[in-house]
Image (tube, rainbow, N blue to C red; front, side, top):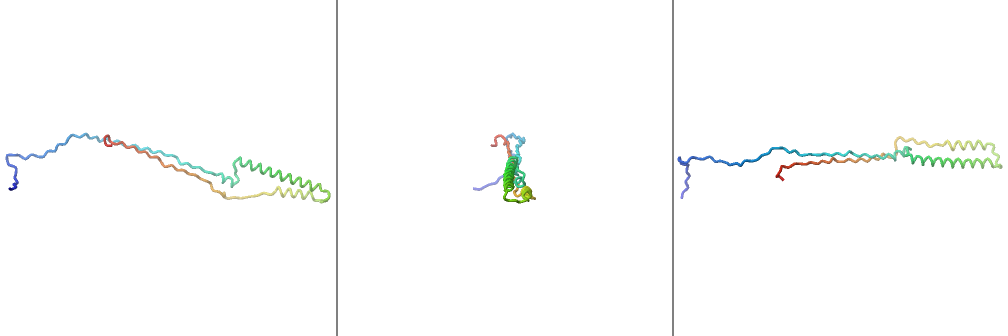
Length: 148
């Protein structure tokens, strides 16, 4: 048995190979995606109440109660001083010629006492609360029909 390689005979012509391609429907239409970004503003809250208290700048209600306390305390001190002065003046056994001068000096010294505090900076810091919100990003793609 032998293998023979032959050539086409002269009576059969060589035919070219044909490829059959079915017609295709091509749509090159671009469908863009949509993107939505929502921002929320940052929130900043400060609490200055401790700083105001350190500097003596109080809220109206606290200032009112402090002033009422000072007035009441001053009234009690003045009343007790007047009673003491009356008792000293009425004491007949004690013949002190300078009793009124001593009483006036005591009153002057008691009423002229002042506490002075000079602060350059408050003792307590301001409380700051900062809240930053990340942006909300939403992307909607539109896939081609039939590709899901």
